[in-house]
Image (tube, rainbow, N blue to C red):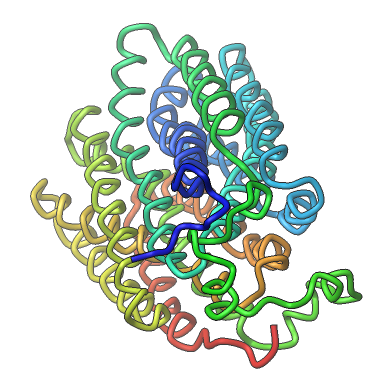
Length: 420
C-alpha cells in the first residue's frame, strides 16, 4: 500500500489525473493519425485513382515528421515542460487533420500529414511519456501499460467510427469531425484541464510517496549536478540504446506495414469494408491486453525477456496470416499481433525510464524514437510499393516476419548500461 504525501491535504495523488490527461491525448491523436488513415486509404485511392503506395507515402511522410526530429522535440519538452508542448502540438495536429477536407492533389495530403506529424511529435508520445515518467517510478511499467492501452482503445473505436461516418457524411466532413475531436478532447480536456508537469510542482512526490520513501527507493542526483556538460550522445557509447532502438524499429516495421495495409488486404481477399475494419479493432483490443499484461508482468519479471517472447508470438501471428484466408484465423493473427504490439510499445519507454535518470528521460527517448518512426514510415511505403509491383501483399508480410525475427535478438540483448 502506497503512502500519501503529507503535503497533499486531500489525500489524493494527482498523478492519476495527469495520467488520464495523457491517455486522452494519445487516444484521440494516435487514433486519428494512424488508425483512421487505414480507413481513408482505400476510399481516397478509389476517388482519385491514386496508387496505394503513393497514398501510403503521405502517412510515411507524416510519421517521419513525427519521429525524425525527435531529438529536437525531446529538447523542447525538457526546456518548456510537457504541458505546454502538449497544448501547442495537438492544436497543430488538429489543424492539419481539418485541412484534409480541402485535399484535391496528392501533394496536399503530404503537406497536411507532415503538419499533423510535427504536431504529434511535439505534443504526442515524448510529452505524454515524460509526464508519466515524472509522476511514476515504482509503478512505472504498469502505468505505461495503462497509457499504451489507451492507444489500443483508439484502434477499437476509431476505425468503425470513421467507416460509419464516411458512409453517412463522406470522407471530407469526417476529417473535420475528427479534427474537432482532437481539439476538444486532446487539447482542452486532456492537456489544459488535467495535465501537470511534475509532482514536485504540486507539493507531491512520484507515486504519491513520502520524501523518505522516495529517497530510499530511487536515489536522485543533486539538482546542482543536473546543470552539467552531459550530452545525450554520451548514451550511445554503450550498446544499450542501439539495441533498444533495434527492437523498437523491428516492431515498428512490422506493425507499420500491417496497420497501414491490413484493411485493404482483408478487402482484397473478399471481405466487406466493415468486416475489414473490425479486424483492426480486434487487433486493438488485444493490444490493450498486451500493454496491460506487459506492464503488470514487468513489475516482477525482466522486461527484455518479456519483449523477446513478444516477438516470437508476433512471428507466429504473421505465419498464420500468410498461410490462411479464413476469417477465424485472421482474427487469431490479429489477436497475436495486437497483444505483442501492445507489449512491445510498453517495453521501450519502460526500459528507457528504468535505465536513465528522470531529468534525462525526454532527451534520451527523443534520440531513440527515430528508430521506431523511420522503420514505421519505411514499412508503410514499402508495403504499398510491393503491392503495386506484385499485386500481392504476401512478399511484404514475409519481410515483416523477418523483422520480427531480428527483434528477438535485439530485445534479448538490451541490457542496462553500466553508466547512464
